Image 1 (cartoon, rainbow, N blue to C red):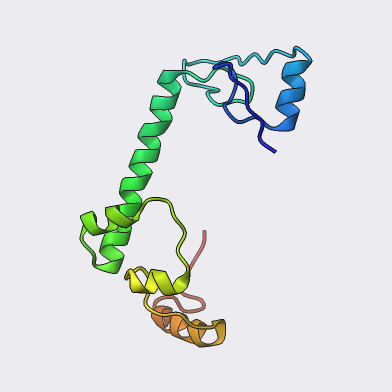
Image 2: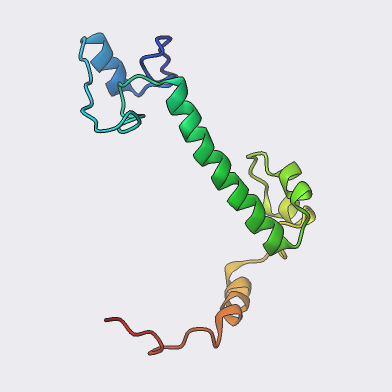
Length: 129
């Protein structure tokens, strides 16, 4: 079931509790010390400025992700960007695309995974104060 509301003062996708609140005439007020504080609080106005601010964060996180995949998989950034479109890939396809090394069961994979960390951190190496 989709919950939609056409008024820009509400989220474009609403949960049932928000719909009930709107139908009941409940108004949400956010007390804020800055123009962007409280942005996205359910029931508050969604502004172009707020959306732009969130998009900057999303773009930055995406760049971080693309860089990490590029470095970790030793792929060109353009190659990673071409396949990083939000889809989920099954393991066989991910291997074909160079995103993973192998497809195996847990019993096979875990010892290999553990080898990657052997000698890096040993019991008692860390100290906390």
